[in-house]
Image (cartoon, rainbow, N blue to C red; front, side):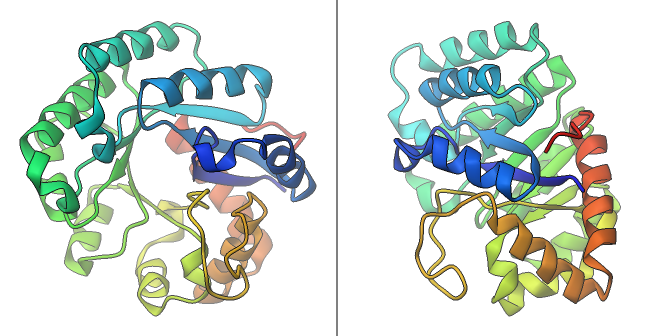
Length: 262
């Protein structure tokens, strides 16, 4: 079986000093792939180092998160673009992410849109999929994406609105859901209404989940087992079938052949 975590932040400072523990946990749980999402230039650089260190386990998605737009240093946007272009030559890079828009940072809305546009054009240029952060902005983003030639889109931690979910599925977008699928009725409804062929699991670590069975512990890749079990229950399917389909989804979306050593 090939288990995957389509969205984690291994370069986040909260994971500092815990990497060996996280890698051991992933291997023990049978995880074949961790997609580590960058948020700025520094994390882009570190995620590439991690991918070089664990080439058949860690896959980097590089980009600038909307919450980092306000902290961009002079020339950092262009330096990040240049770094991503450079890394695209190595074929380690599998997506542009985490990028997007967030209503919580309306004070820098124009800067967010400017950076998001640059990241989307980069994805077009490199023919890479995009991993989208869309808190409170999903409707705007789905409309915006129609103007770009981005073929593969993943809406990370989709929660609402449900009418946009059906539109996203019609456009063959992918949806990731994580540990809240175990306890959140809203997220469970999203999973129920999303075809399994459009779903991928995530942990979004180091985000902390306070409810049972996670109880505020350090978020680990092995949480994917709980996510997949919950999806299987919602879909009324054997968990093995869910795991197999999700692995296929991963390979299709990211254009990656999963290793059998996970």
